[in-house]
Structure formats: structure tokens, C-alpha cells
Length: 180
Image: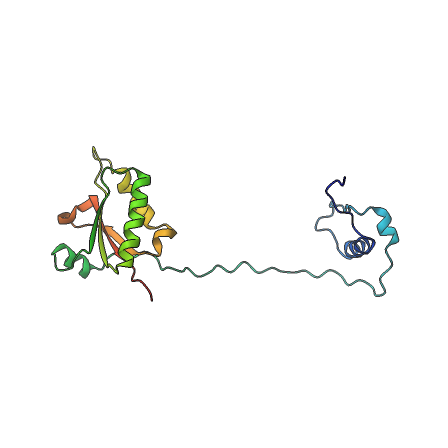
């Protein structure tokens, strides 16, 4: 039975010995240890040409990919006023009252995907205000969810609804247009 480690061939040991002779440790206290053993270093033929000093390689920082989706933007003042006055139509409504967080998350994602597929433009998501002056769990969570990558491809932006549509207990959500 083998120990699971492959033994280096003679050529690989010679190559390793040649490479390790051509480099210098980064720190003075660093020591070189090899699995090939000292016998491979003794057997290594001397290079024909003198080894060049090691070059310092600078690695550029990784390039951050450009964001696929732009940042969330609130409704324009004109659109908000039109919606509040009933001149701009709300394409669909979703009421999350009585749902657990996981149920509400799944329902919201499904609702947004369907609205996006139907090419809806403006949605109303009702979260509820909460009890006892404290904002409810869904009231706090839904805006965070809308910023997640799974929602960002569907949502342009959102903001609190007008008092006529639920005020702090509801959100207007603008949906991206379906491409193609």
C-alpha cells in the first residue's frame, strides 16, 4: 500500500533543486526544507549559465467587476405625487400581514418575479407598521431584502407609501423592465 504521497521523479527533484537554489527567502530567518531530501540537491547538475537574480513581481490588485445593476433609487417627486393622487396606477399589491419571515421572503420574491414577467411598473407591498410603536419585523426586513442580489435584478427602487396607501406600513416598489 502507498502512503498516498507520490514520490518525485529524478527529473522533478533536479528541477526542484535548481529552482530552490535560484530564489532567496523573503525573511532572513526563513529556512528551506524540501521533501526531495539533500541527496537530490547534491545530485543536481550545475546550471550552464549563472542564475539570474530573482525579479520582484508586483501583482496588481484584482479588478472589481462593474456592478450589473445600478444602485437603488427612490421614486421621483413627480411619480410619487401622481401615485398619491391616483393618477399613476399601482399595477399590483402584495399584503404580507400574518406571514413568517421565510414565507414573506418567498412570497415577495415570487410576487416580484411575476410582476417583472408581466412588465408591471409600480407595486405596493404592505408590510404593516408593527405594534406598540416598534416597527414590525417585516417592516424592517423587506427593505433589506429588496437590496439583496436576488431582488436587485428585479427592483429599481422603493420608498414608503403615501398615507392613503398605508404610509409607513407599506412600500412603493418600482420594477425593472423585462429585457428582450
